[in-house]
Length: 303
Image 1: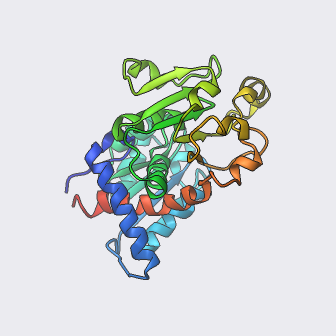
Image 2 (image 1 turned 90 degrees about the vertical axis):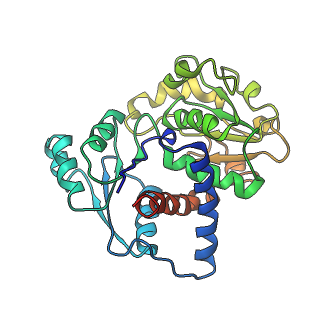
């Protein structure tokens, strides 16, 4: 069996990603029609959480149950990783007992180290640098709602964080234009590596980024681990709030996305989050369907 990991969107080819989105739609339709499909019977997913989550845990657990497999939830209190065991040792031990490891952690280099010593596929369920599983759900949601995203314009508004970095990867893998609007000092580090890519544009004017966009995306101003910066970040990010006036600059049929949880009245106003252009609830549900397609790809298609 060829071991393949999913640490960033770059771990799959563009054609594989397109196929994964199509397969997500098929799996969703199969579930809705009541068709029983359990390709992962007797398979076990270890879910290692250094950072808490609602959508990530529920979607992966549900995916394994629906596929006939099972999962083990491991918090820092449940493993020796939380007590200082070397990542390499934990990877060797865990991967000798389970069929796949999902890791949600802080430093991206830690999941890279884990994958180097793992005998089974490793999935990045979020690091401080990337959040590729969320992008699978976002791309699936756009395709369902508006069709192919290739050639479209996406506006990222706010922090140059892990979601922004993964949107940079997505622009390259799915071939769309990405306008990034961040306050000075909060630009995505990944942009400097791809500044010559004509699909990517970095600016400090949210209005300029959103004008004629097909999709507008934002995230919280202070992520987990940045709570002490909340006050200073509020001052810097207030001009980047996604509100009705900003959305009006996008195309009339533009969609709004947010990976959630959202802070109404901060990065997005309630009328946008709960409004007709928002697809955040479909986006959240699609974590389940896109991750089922990912698990199938890593554990069935490549065995």
